[in-house]
Image (cartoon, rainbow over all chains, first blue to last red; front, side, top):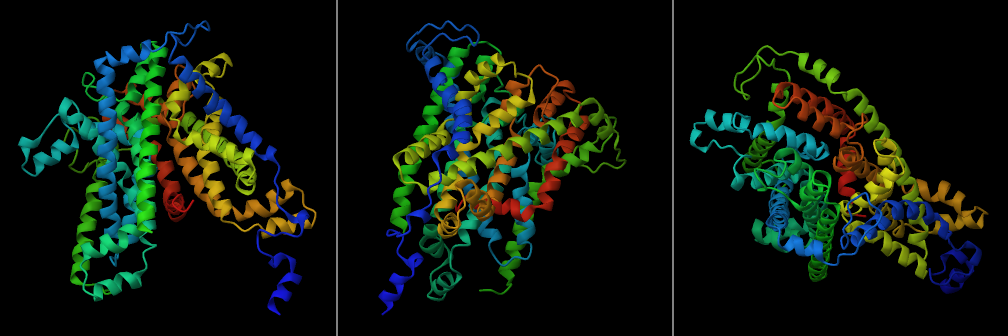
Length: 311
Length: 273
């Protein structure tokens, strides 16, 4: 009886068998054309040209290029500034990823409770994430200066011996860049973790508590697996953002003192626009691309395995 | 469990303390921006005789008004273009299972991995050859293309989870694909459009590297470049600089406070996409 009824109502048929061909949705291919043209003009073609230029003596002006093979990359291997910048880039990316997400998760766990100020705290802690990074970086450049607010604060609480030239000290400056990025984007990580935490069913969590499992055990066994998508997104955003970091370095230290805080992105800018070495600069951009691609692929592989294991 | 206990109170105190630490830089920002340059007391002690002179001077000498207009124009036009072309492209990419559709989508996803530093230099040459260096339209063009992969990715993910019934009903009733897209599909895309709008607006408005390259040496500026130029010009006149920083933050924070809930949901919405 029921099967007969269903057969008589066409749009109740299973998705794979569609009797009305006219009703099938087939939006034409040319809908993709405007997006493809823009994407090709701005991203695809220039990126392909960039990869090619990395193997030439391109100077940004002369249309006559000569192919020089791996010379730009060989020069990079002998250039302590470039090697150092690659090291800084990796260190900054890893440090930002760990600290920003660790702090973001703690903040999310704290806000996702019964506390009365949770909505206010969420709005306040997220606010720095919408502000222009170059602006917050200039603000911090003053705060971290020799006569800045951070040193004044240390003096006011009797920690005069802790006062530092935070950005002028080659050993500290890199960590100050990390600090500024974490200050600005910990709230961003928090908001994504919060969205993930809302998918944790309260009943299961409370049942586990009644059954006697402690907060750490509950977090590890119930919350963490359900947070997997939020963790994936957060790690992806912060590691790629960290690898490409430019604005904060430019505003806080300009890559200095010396080359102590140069990243690949600041070297790309300096080599092209102050030294005019476009070919070398674009070779650095190719290295940057390779690092981003490796990081994305590695992270995707590890996390998709974890997400599968968790579900 | 759901009661407000003593431990909840302790947590509340701790979280508020953390928030105060986070807000400390903003206090210093406001505190120094309203301070006369002659006042040399500690940056953390409250300014006793506040003045607005820094703001008027920063506004007049920094060209911030023109920069603000340029930023609004560039952001509005480029985000509008990105949303239009990406949602339109996502429709066949999400619905068709043909080879060309999968291939095109993969090609667009490649754009998620390519850092813009790679394309920026060759594109610099093209923009220069087109005579667009120093024009804000070079930025509109740049963002309109740069933001396509991410936005299309969001739209395709959202569209795949949407039922086809409404479009099919519209098609049976004689709608062409463009009409079906405009009047049936697009209204259903509203939640992800809000997410895409928020994320694109923030990243375009805040971008510094691109206008630094494409507008340098011209009298056209966006807000981030104008601020950087201002810092370069008034090197250690921090009261004035802080006033300029605050002027550049106020429009952003005003929009944020007004639309706080949808902005935060927009950022978190990428999670479901």
